[in-house]
Image 1 (cartoon, one colour):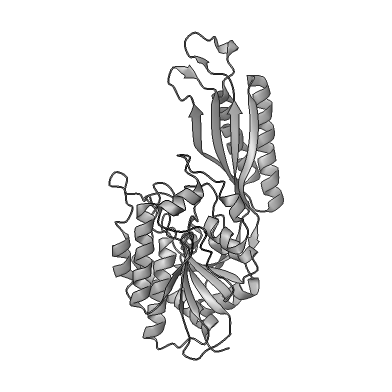
Image 2: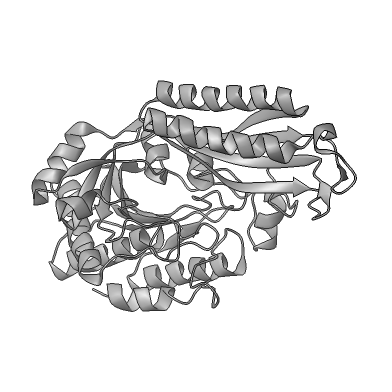
Length: 400
């Protein structure tokens, strides 16, 4: 098994010398280097990689005897959030390749194909649509919808893909032979830490989404405009951020304003426009709807008092995902692993919604910190995750 060697090769790609965090945005040079790394690792194992028109990749370990049996796909993503951690995504890809090594070392002969895949733009850090690669492959998002997306610099999605040396008209990877999908991921929380176990399985993904709040006011001079004469959208936004925090705490849900853009963005000017993005997550679809509606209602009330206006746009919303409980129970029995929920979105949720039986394997994160340079997993736990994934793949791809 070459897990530790692979991890050393991945460590410097897209890493910021200043913060230690990662900038592995899709269709950039760092992401292209990771795509090439994946192809090389697959080739070293005799696996032929198919790369589709947008950069999704998939390689298959074929059984010795020809079979029409559906395959078992594993893998994750290689892109990161802005200034993100090393483990979110790449751990699942490196572990998938290492699990193939483990199975071969055990002398395992698959009775059905085992695939290793990488989906692009899982984080939505560049074009604002989480799990875009898997959404396009499953049809959850159409190309007509996706090609209208622009990044922060105004670059259209199709232009970014073309600039990366890909052809967005060349088609997408085929999920037709995928009978089951298993995604390994670092845990983005402390459940496994509290249980004092290295590995767990997923029971569900909380519904979540991203909403753009456009607060419009009137630009004016910061010195000469009396406070009572202002139509300041920053005030409306500030009160909305506080309201979101309060509503989420009261409902025991999650609400975060983590990104804003201000126009004209001058130190000595009252802004004319504040655009803020809300990330909201809740324990049920109804709870999520109620949370976002309560935040929007308070924002509109405040806008009325501030003389500003508000427009809210849902940019990316994913409903609740309940993974196949029978599959989770069956796999948990292999190692006595706990089955736990997650509040983070994953490609596994998109494939599950598409009707593919899906499971997730989590690896303990000692601090629970994620989407940050401080994200971490101990090597011993990562290796335990590889062994667990190998056990799962053997169970699913072995003789019926």
